[in-house]
Image 1: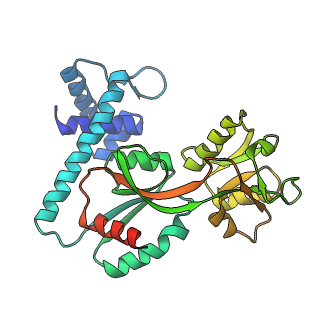
Image 2: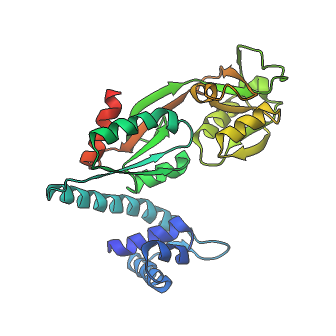
Image 3: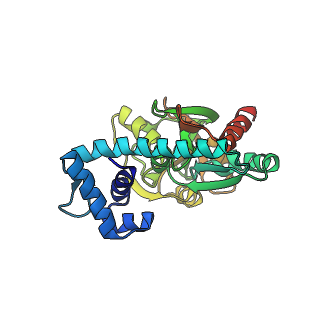
Amino acid sequence: MELRTLRAFVEVVRNGGFSHAAKVVFVTQSTISKAVKQLEDELGLPLLDRLGPGIKPTAAGEIVYRRALRLLAERDDLAAELTDLKGLKRGTLRLGLPPIGSSTLFAPLFTIYRQRHPDIEMRLVEHGSDRLQELLAAGDIEFAGLLLPVPDEFASQLVRREPVVAMLAADHPASGWPSVRLRDLRDTPFILFDAGFALNRIILDACRREGFEPNVVARSSQIDFIAQLAGAGLGVAFLPRMIAMERAQMPFRPVLLEDPGTEWAMAMVWRRGAYMSPAGAAWLALLREA
């Protein structure tokens, strides 16, 4: 089993097809197809379901995909360690950050890090938590800003805990309350972030514990747009208190959410036991210092 065939298979699954995978690894589509076929022949099992719209992994393909991610990440770790051993003086810090809270929590730290380590290149990607966790597991990034809890395969350093507030229009009956429970908002439409944002999961899980599914009327990845929709009376939206209070000039009223399990706990997360670059170790040291 060769790493090149595993890489081809991983990119087909990740990109949903052979043509997109070929562009990612800069080879022809036929080369990708042959590599996946070689892997299937070697294992004696079909790894991809090619029927219907899109290409999806079979049950065997899911197992191979998960294992291949780990093997490819280990290969990257090996290459990084050997590069450091050869005395590379310049390094790269590969970070994945979520849209919610990053500018407030991490921008000041970036400035300090840059002042201390001017020769380190900082590569940043921004996605929702689900995508960041996938990139982290694959070794495409060294750290990710994720909400706790995280799976056991990851280690974490807590950065900030914040209660969540419900953002309500001024004329909502609960807008003047000091706090509110989700069950009090079950008849109010919900405005959520796009799929893949961990804050959605926190809110929806808490609603289910209260025995109801909210009526979701809008989704967006834009914080300010969501806040404006809530202030205009379209429904209730949710943000960590710290992030909501930065938008005090907007027309919504923030009301503390009382439900257990709705705390927003942002952490910097990395793969447990994985090789950590000097650039990454310096970043983690700064986080712990701050």
